Length: 124
Image (cartoon, rainbow, N blue to C red; front, top):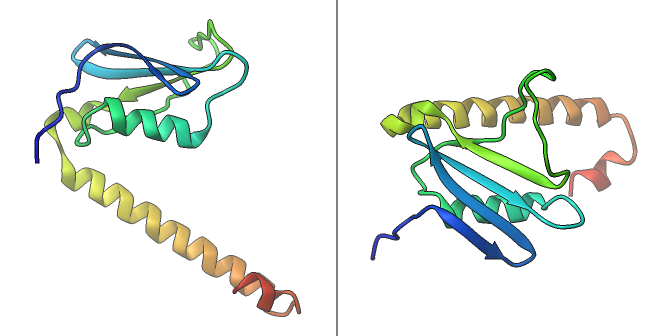
């Protein structure tokens, strides 16, 4: 399988405008549309299409005083510094912790519905 070459620049992906850059050695993805926010599916598709898979990306929300937004329908994904070292162990641990927390939360929700007659319809 050929390895894909990832590059910086501006791209069009369906209705989305994409800007890929490397700022201070870290990947940055900007995704926007003209009239409303891109969907989660579009953001996810852009991330995996334009940024190498081994890079850990996140959408960050700084303090209100540091928040800058020049376009109401633009979202940014930033490379998390630990992924520069391709620290797969840290990513796997984080994923495992999220899965465990979600599993516990789902169990709590199921327990709270156990006496409701509608539970059997929710659990199909």
